Length: 181
Image 1 (cartoon, one colour):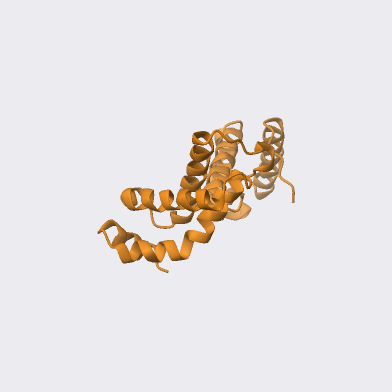
Image 2 (tube, rainbow, N blue to C red):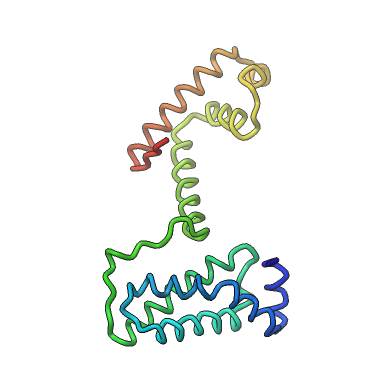
């Protein structure tokens, strides 16, 4: 299914586009609702919540970006399940509910947090060392090319890269980010 094309049709009010989305994602939406409620809701309540999710999609199709339909549906399903639990004054065991990390939305948030941590860590380097890092990692320049352009010896560039990595490792560990290979 071409997500961009189907969303475009949905935005124009195509009921057929909504039907295709429901056919493709209804099992996913019901699973998110069921997992959030941890089996506390009756199947008909879960189906009602799923219907509310697709109604919300119909009403807010212009807010959904191509490539983010599944995460959007998952987030709305999660909220609809929580709302229904509150409305029915039911509780689900919170410690058992963990959102799936492979979900694109969660992965995006995690990636943004990692990027912010790295930016913060890079701010601890000197301007020259940040320039070396930028050229080496972003521009993929070799130590020899960097040395020529910055009027240094290649061994100095390699040494500054090594010391810079050590500083980054120290700052990231101090901030609580531990990367396991």
